[in-house]
Every structure is written in C-alpha cells, then in structure tokens.
Image 1 (tube, rainbow, N blue to C red):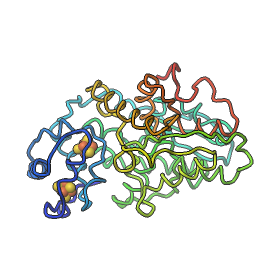
Image 2 (spheres, rainbow, N blue to C red; image 1 turned 135 degrees about the horizontal axis):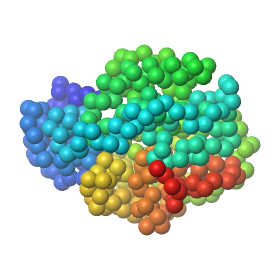
Image 3 (cartoon, rainbow, N blue to C red; image 1 turned 180 degrees about the vertical axis):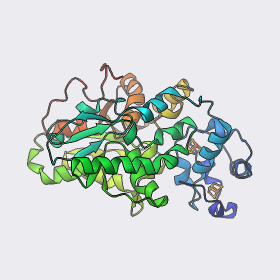
Length: 362
Ligand code: SF4
Ligand code: SF4
C-alpha cells in the first residue's frame, strides 16, 4: 500500500488508472497530467472527485498503486473535507475491547473488528457454523482501514503494529493459533499490509469466507436446503487488497466453492460491473455526496438484476449497511453471506433477517 514512483511509467500505459475509473471521465492525456500533478505534490481536482474505491490500483498495468498516491495527497490537503475528529471513525478506534458473544473453550475466535455495530454481527455470526465461536470486537481490534475513506489513509499503516499486537494478545488469551476476520479490511491488513510492512503476525489470519468454506466441506450433510437461486456479489473496496491466488483475489475462489456447495448460481460472469470493474458501494461519499452515492448503487443494482440476479450477496458489513436501502427500492434482495448459507442449512435467520431491514442497527 504505497505508490511506487519507479513503476509509474507513462510510456507503458494509457493513463488506465483514471481513464478506467468509473466515477470520472478522463481521457489518456488528462489522466497522465493528473498523475504528473500529484507526483509533483500539487493539488488536482481528482482528489475531490475520487470516491476512495481503490480500483485504480487494479487498473494500473505496471503495479504503481496510483490510489495510494491519491489517498496520500487527500490526507495532506484535507481534500475530502472531513473534519479531523470525524466522529464515527474515532468512535471505532477508541471503543473498548468487547466480547460480543462468548463461545465454548477451545472454539474458534472471530474478530468483528471496529465496525461490528454497523450490522448485527452477534446475529449474523450465529447458528451451527458459529455455535462454538467467541466473537470479539472494539477499538483494539479495529484495523483502521475505514480511515482511507475519511482522508486519513496513513492510519492503517501507523496503527498496524498495535493492531497485530492486540490480536496476538487475544489469541493467547483464548488459546487459539488462528483468528477469523469477519471483515476483509482486517484480514487484508493482517495479511497483505503486514507482509508489505514486514510485521510479524504470530497467528494465522483466516478470512470469514475461508472459514465458511472449510466448515461446509467438513459438514456437507448439514446442507439440507440447496437454494437453487441466482445471485450477484458485491465485492467491496477492501476485497481488492486480498492476497492473490493465481490471477484472482483469493476470496473469490472461496466464495465460488461456497455458492456451489449450497446450490447457488452466480451471475457475475454476465455482468458489466464485475471483477476489476466492479462498482463501489459508495460508502466513502454516502454522507457527503449522498445522491452521487445512490446513483452509483442504482447503476450497480440494475446491472445485477438485468442478468437475472435474484439476490445481491454481501461480504462486507459496510457495503450492506449503505446499499440495503437502494436494494430494497429496486427490489433486489440484499443478503449477507452468513445469512445466505444459514438458509441452506435450514436455519431461522432471526429478527435481523437477510440484511437487517427495519432492524434497529445502531
Ligand atoms: S499509475 Fe499506472 S496507469 Fe496511472 S499513469 Fe502511472 S503507470 Fe499509468
Ligand atoms: S480510487 Fe476509485 S474513485 Fe478514486 S481515482 Fe481510483 S478508481 Fe477512481
């Protein structure tokens, strides 16, 4: 997660980073000029236009990580106009450590990170798959990645040693050698970012999808209601930081296997906005540019529905929290991944339902 100036070679690209950005309309020369301006340390309109989706890191053919330069300049110039003491974020990082649900001794340990109240994790992480699991959350276990949407992209990096130390202490306390992360951001911080920053991680980070995939592999007889439905998938911004398995982000293979096991067909291959071109949920601008965020969501939902999706599956708690309103309006059922799997296990979803509609989420 750092811009690599040596790799930003204008002779080897067509300004792909900003030409392909789905939220602005730049031609090749304008894109390159914008990047030159940012490299010189000057301000440029892209700093305000950018919705902090991280996609341009994927678009750059030379691996220069242009989003990391944009994020750096956004922080230096306060371009996003978000106050230094933006309340939601500082709340997440300062919230005390909490045991959201205590499981059985020796059971799995799940960290719901700092945004565990965005969706009701105690309910979403329930049922057979999680019956022995202890779920922890709060500031000490917050990776701080959300700060990238608030113009403070350096926070996950500066906070990283403490984040890992806090989790290592929790692993020791609960007697486990692996920690499952319910949010990609924490998983990617404990894997990709920790590797880049050469921080030793004394436990094995496990992605929620990997955990579910392994549980289903171990308990195939528990799948009593194959769902026979078609879904699209909302891959959030943080999923772009996942370690790669071959030419794909590793989580996409885990998800494909889960969907296949529970009898669900993905329509992603038929979509326009899929893979690298997937659209952001708009959470970075949801409060500051609400109409623009909703416009992006609606384009995304129409695209999924047009190719036959009956549901939109979410992996990220933040994505489902900000998109469920638009899904409801456009009649595409939003469903969090654990709730989808629980349906196939024949379990009740509880008052939170598929996406906590009408549920008093704090
Ligand atoms: S960041 Fe990548 S795509 Fe953008 S100008 Fe530099 S080399 Fe080209
Ligand atoms: S981070 Fe996303 S919105 Fe910002 S410039 Fe890159 S692709 Fe565009």
